[in-house]
Image (cartoon, rainbow, N blue to C red):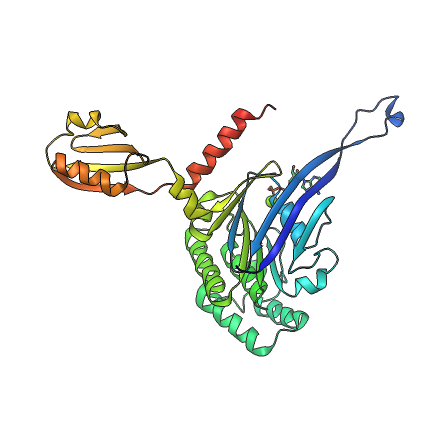
Length: 333
Ligand SMILES: Nc1ncnc2c1ncn2[C@@H]1O[C@H](COP(=O)(O)OP(=O)(O)O)[C@@H](O)[C@H]1O
Ligand SMILES: [Mg+2]
């Protein structure tokens, strides 16, 4: 079994939020002028070296809070956190040298200066050896195309260009873990794709563990191997993406019949629901308890003359949205 690099047990975090009270004669007698927000409620999570974990949740679910706790920016109210076997709040300096952190809104770059100045400065701050620094810059040139950006002041960059710069900055020292808070927010598909390829390279070739948050479920399926879903401060799902997709009970298939129309007898098949018919094409929902894709196609082909078919891949987004829905129905608010 692989070494665990992050171990979190019963992690709880509260925030106190000031509440504006109406001015009243009794104001000074009321002691509590704040409310407690339970951002994280007894979270258990362990992540092994080399994993790519997507941490998903709606706005306000507690994703950023988790990253702040894991990177030692915040202190937990109860529970424990170990990163590389150390408490991140107590051993912040030692841990920072081995991780890279990116928050969407905060920048590692000097706004008015060309990107290369920021990178050179980070090299000095982190004491990055020349060979590692050069290798990282080459990687960023290859995967993110930053060659043309090095001499440009950060403030004149587009969002996509700046994020390319930010990525370069946080991977310069070749960290063992990358913590990325909503790294793909607002990015175009090309930049997203470049980032995905870079992350996969760092993961596969450098053994980098990646923990990224997002509220966009489509990113997870493309980038991550494991998904953890956070809802109102609690983990409600933690599984490998492949497992989840395999567990889906029904799947969708479009079949094109050689005859001019969809045969009526198709409706009689057990475990099949014909969702729509358009001339000679039928969109079918089939139950995976009854059929594998192979057995279904075999059955169709022995009964009908089939011209072609298209299997729709199950969608992680749909699985997770259904999970949210079923929780909302159960939980009495
Ligand atoms: N500094 C803060 N003070 C008070 N409440 C906060 C603070 N930061 C976050 N919260 C609250 O904690 C909850 C979780 O926030 P956050 O971790 O930022 O969620 P996410 O990143 O998933 O959107 C939210 O209800 C948010 O309003
Ligand atoms: Mg957030």
